[in-house]
Image (tube, rainbow, N blue to C red; front, top):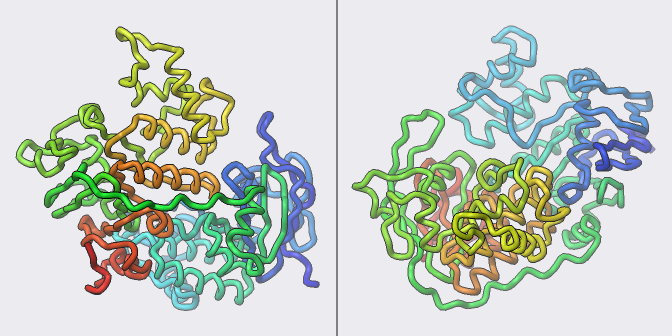
Length: 507
């Protein structure tokens, strides 16, 4: 057998009483695409930090091509040939592609441009070296990150959730690139929650649970249900069916809504028209940065329209364009923002105080004072009903894992018994178990007659949740597409601004 490129033996890392990694054994073979699977909190991120030199292990040893490896910083890791592309890109938008790469790669401008062009052509990562980053699509920005990493001549490339913001066409192209890299001699550590993608591109998978390695498998020999069971230690519940519901009145309507911005890094919206009725889920698909945050701010009330446009947004039949968020909530509107910490919850406050942010009208205040017993009961209800893994109502929001905090915020908003629920990125960065639980709650709410609007960059999620889908691209919204008559490829064409074909349009 070929000796491993990278080996970990008995590697452990703790933060106080939290054992993030416990006795990890891992072998990464040369010229392999090796998946790391696990729920939120399983220890994947900590393990990658150890391999990339961001953190150092408490115990155990790492070997590189059979020799002891001690990484004290990412710079040291890069000298050995270890590179990493993070889930959240680290490019400066006001600089060109070549200027961004010049920040970490030495060389004259002409030489860098030639290397960028050559690598792009060789690995299917074509991008204009002189283009400014702010003008690039998300897929093109990811290519820049990978090219920058390849210019350090890595032997091991770590990719963290590389497909989370890509349309289907770009995912296919990325996988072709990864296979070319593998065949050229590069090993790849691939982190993803998308099990079918792992089955499609990876030749080995190590499974983590609670900081421990619980399995090593060839993912091509197991279906997604088997892999999910290995990850979470139990069978995945069957998704709740979307029961036939007689659609009621329109609870959210946008009538040709346009909104101009002077900020060069924000997107102006043009003629946005949509309607969400009671008993249905409408999904908004699109690549990040095409106007999702601007649309969310207008619907939630964080951005208020001029008086002449007030009637272009209506909730429960009333014009709300000039209403503040609290006024919209008083009509039966609830909102789960994309940013969990800072907008959905205050990290330094305990959960019981975070409950008060939106649930105070439910009798949690008495004569202007907090009714502590009711506030605690409400918070404990959120924890129990939505399986939030925490020490209790007094735990600080910032101490929860991303998945558990998301379950708490979604639970808090659902317990408000809204008529209209707006959820942005409901399962962003959430593991498969927590994502399944959140989606089932949303479908159950829809079955009870609630109108739900979902913005998500996860096409699989939208097809599981929604009755209809519209696509946001460059600030404009596509026609309404009936999920049952639409393929992911049709959505993908709208996402990149191409014609999807009249046969995909319904509703």
